[in-house]
Image (cartoon, rainbow, N blue to C red; front, side, top):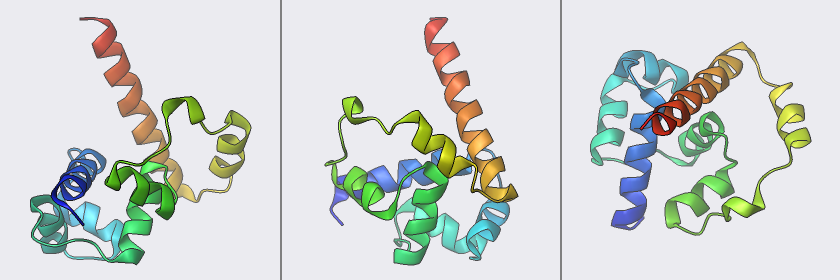
Length: 117
């Protein structure tokens, strides 16, 4: 993983964790708080299984996450159809639904804040 990809991953993990503690965030992935800390500081990279879970939390498949990290993600014009998003969201468990709600809320707040500038 090149430096730019590593930095994108660090930024994504920080964004996903938000104000949640390292310990609480680590529980989602069944890793220690130290593993999360190392991911956020770039001292280590999550393995493929954890990258897949991080991607899922961020709304990416593993392939989409890797493309994003490498800077080859699809263009904004290649959006996923809403019907597909709804279908996939309906299959989430409660933890995943909560994470989705948090991500949508964070996005809406960011949009509102940028509109207010």
